[in-house]
Length: 330
Image 1: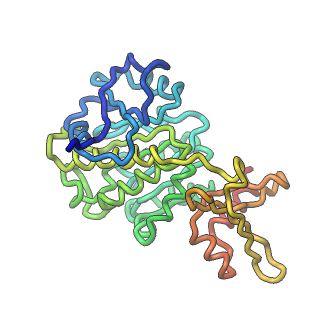
Image 2: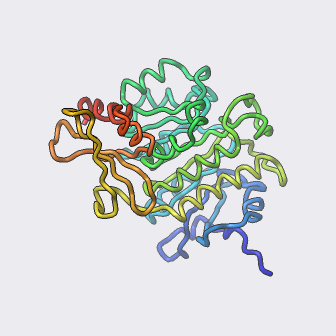
Image 3: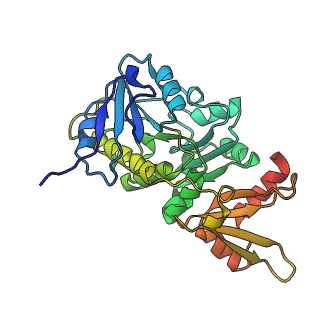
């Protein structure tokens, strides 16, 4: 009996062109890939979409590779061991950004990004309150950027999916994983995301039809065969690529007929809140009035919990958040 394993193939950077075979994603390792490809090839795929990988061993080819995959419109994962020089080099002007990290340390990429200019969309997931600079959190709140700390995510993992659905560029600092689940990392912390949780977030990223790039960093460069690092990094890549393979391009503005429209009346004379549920995936969006352009509302990714809250007569915090944002920044 043949056992089909993960369809991973090596590709030279010079072979990135229109004539290359179709693929579901391109993985770029800055430096040596170590045992990660070998561990990835051991896994069983759910889909059959080919995935290419390449190595930028001397650290000079990454900009050209990123430019090529952007032109080809191929999803890309950059695997960058140890620390990341900065986030700005990976971000075009229209990037919609998500960050998964434990706090404002190791180093503080978030503060550096804030000192430049925040993207139009930014969300921060999985941080621990006692490791997060309150000044940074306050600035994000002032600019109506959504955050989801570790405790909130652990109570309900589905809270992260709408946040990641809106992002196109993702950054994952592997030092956010607790020491027990990734002991190979130096300067790790006793508390943090579980291995299963970081893989859940990776899958949510892949499920977004906005996905363009994910940068995974902060893990040891010495990924030996059989090590925790090599196995977890392979499983994380698996979850991203399998999410990409089943991702649906859907939005209420594109195909209204594919959505159930559910209007909730907030009291006898209250505001009517409109929710839309996809007939294909079951995912939810909410309609938020655009105070500066009447008749052209915003459609915001949300969860069924927001709809349930509205049905109980409570205005969801997410709706209020984006209503205020439309008043101040649209």
